[in-house]
Image (cartoon, rainbow, N blue to C red; front, side, top):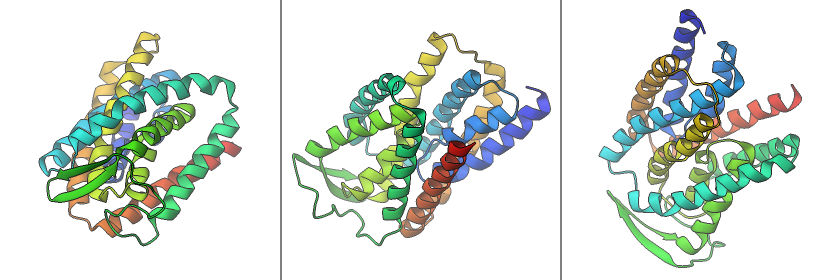
Length: 266
């Protein structure tokens, strides 16, 4: 990559990191195309994207953590199951058509976006969701109950689907926490912002161990741009009303689904 290409790519990463970090997302599905257009090979782009996501996640976590919107106990209770599910999904993906995987991805994002736009009582679990092994949680000013008997298998399934498709699980874990388990939107965003970085780490290490190319001197300015953008996004997010955040998240999900539809036909 030329110096000019690195600069342009860094600016693009910075700009995209802001809206993605506002809603607790890593943005890897957009970073890879940017790196490819800048002249980077697919394997190096995937590895570099995961590195960028980890740095962006750290920046977001620093802001959300200071404002006490990251429920650390809940986060670390579900992450191991997500990682195991993601590994299983990545392994099984070799036997499933890429078209089927993309259709699953588009369908899940579309459904999540639709329900994000519907009026909902903040922090209230839907009536059709049973309450199994509820865990009373307090994080900052928020108090809520989480049905761990359902969340743990749901997290493993989400990780499995994310592994199948090859994306970060934050795309799915956030809508599930909000829509199915009654987790306050701000807490779900805080959890997701840290979750995406943790789950990106094993993928990044796997690429390195597998011998995929990685140039730290190219990755650092890109990651620095993501770090800056992901430091700005949470600040804006915390000043934005929850209804608007739900709309922003729905827009992000629809945009990613549209991007996948374009890839499906090109």
